Length: 395
Image (cartoon, rainbow, N blue to C red; front, top):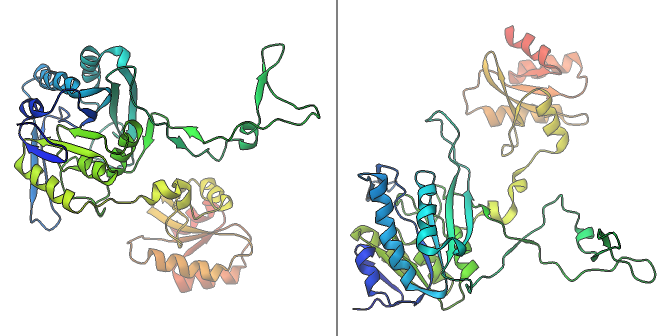
């Protein structure tokens, strides 16, 4: 029985792929087990449901062979204009790349995409793993590709970009001038072509689309992949569909989909999500990281001056300072500021935390009487230098 578009199949993709017509798929995205050598388990916050899958393998060779035979089948299912994206991490990514070169051809390797995100953990010695890898291969040189453009960075001199450049008699690039000596404008620029490092936030625990499935990827990541190499109406195939993120993204973007997973729970979850597709937005992507900055450069400079860590998302605290009595939150008071108001803000903002001391870093000479009043009334330390802070902490 042949697989139909807009379907989710339960079974091992090694068998299920045989039901997919050859050269019928425009994009294959694979998010297989990563060779993590552990059992992945995740329960819903209310404990009502638990999802799990095993990523334990006899050996690295057995894992690579598992992928190899499935990639061979995937290759047959791709149209000549199709593309394949394989998602992995550092566990076996370099071995996977060699295998993909052999199956799909080194000449068809297009990009090694780095998906970077911010996650915090103090559980191990060494550098944090804050990225995963997606290998992008085409079936042939004649693959679909839709150029995506990013906005120019704030440091880009846009007015120079808009001027047409030519080579002079020395073969050096110069701005072209008209007969009046004025610069000639270039054709309209669309922005910076998308690069191979993608800063897309990891799904936070409260994201609307989160379904508590282990290793669930954000729809925004699949959006970008689907946008790059497909058109509306094309067919997207995910042989390890898990929670169905690829399928949901395809449906939202008016593409057809085929999902495969050997877990009955994963198939049920995918079908449930497809009935009511939900996509989380990202304020970080929409507004940029700089939108989270509340402090101006003078305040940030003051925090840096005393070796503090800048705090951006708290209107009552500008920085944290490591001292002999532990971390001390402080607010910077600039000349002309209402120091009493600042004292109230930091007192309120830090009241729920068990900080032993709190402080105001005054950037001007504060009257002695005013200092004593604020320190007594709000239980704060007012300081103008680090040595003064240290002295008051010892009292």
